[in-house]
Amino acid sequence: MAYIISLKYSNREPQFEFLDEPEQMFLFGLSMGLPVGTRRMPTRAKETSRKKNYPDIFPMPGLNAVSSRFRDLVEEFEPGVHQFFPLELYRKNGDPVEEEYFIFNCAVSFDCVLTAKTDVEWRKLNSQEEYPSLFIKNSRDQILSHPQIAGRHLWCGFRQKCVGVYVSDAFFSRLKKEKFNFFRSKECPEIDEPWVAEENLGPQLKYEKEHGLQKGMKPWLKENSDVLF
Image (cartoon, rainbow, N blue to C red; front, side, top):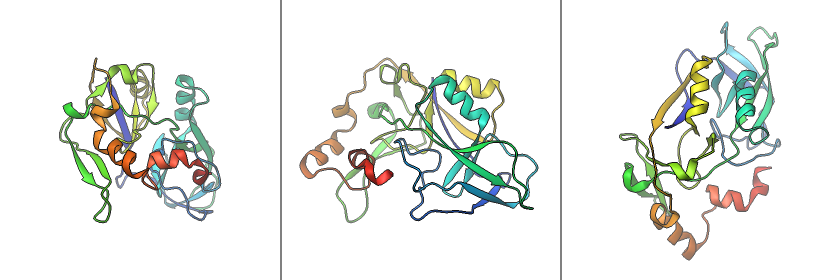
């Protein structure tokens, strides 16, 4: 069993504003799924509504903040793979937050959802484009290919878009055991079936072969990684 974890938005979450928001700042929520550079990353944020304690994972404007506990757990499972950008946090009165926090980016992305067994539909990217985009609904579980994800612990979708980060059962068990808090989670059953690109992404691959990559989409960004640095 794998899981999707995502940011939890509620009136209990800390509220911050960035003090050094860069031009064209990244807005990737919990993760991009591709390595990014520091040029478009903020480094400092100040609290706008007072909270006594901060959770291990919480949303920032367009991004996220994670504790050093979360960083250490990720590094234990996949050392040196993912990105943690230091984030200086200040309380509403201006005092610095003593605990270390980071903006987290899961730097790995690949596809693993078996579309024939999952509630999905194909949509146009927008009214002007013909590019077919796969939309994964939430009314049923995402069924994942066990051979495709074996040995992995944290990853994002690539062409198969997903809000959040996939994590292994082993990683999720540690999150629960060590009482990490303030995130949403959803189970993703695995079955012993290989993931074949043509069977699960046929319309997208056909379009890309005929028209090329769609600018701004993750495959295009991977081929043009200089825009992320």
